[in-house]
Length: 233
Image 1 (cartoon, rainbow, N blue to C red):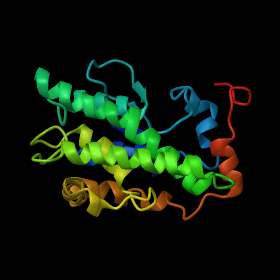
Image 2: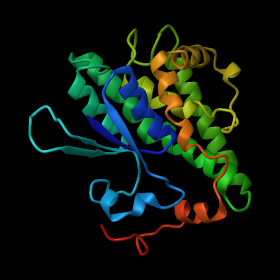
Image 3: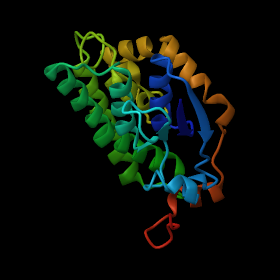
């Protein structure tokens, strides 16, 4: 059994997509990030960056004590290793999947996240910041569109954790001020991943936890932390 500490963000969706695709038994513990659940001592004990998702594997492959994993990319690699699914064992295929996984965690996710912040959460519009992150998101969409030319999935013919990592960050494309019609191969891939039963089930798991808006108090919790006011683990 996998215990998943989760909230319906793109990084949270990555993990439910894997668990649904791989048919792994799991249970969700919600971490309401706009209420400050990510700062509770019990959560910080195994997710020291005070971010979700995180998992606890009660039955690790080595038969030992439960294993905790934080950071969404690390969780995907761990689960792929545990199940033997969605990450090739052979050198070149594995290398390619990991390249694009790290491309997402180091590029697409952070840039799209800043796009979301300055476009929707900042207390006042800052045109330079909005343009900067909308344009960089557009550039990254173009990189992914070119990568998908002649390929069914990001790493080639087979669906992988690279696709699971990237897809949830493309879901809010309208919010990111991107038009998928400008990226035909990306759009084709996006629609194919959206139609997968595992994707449908994963996003359905989000529905009980979805909220229409984040309150002003929630924004202070989400965006007001520094090293001086982080709680102790």
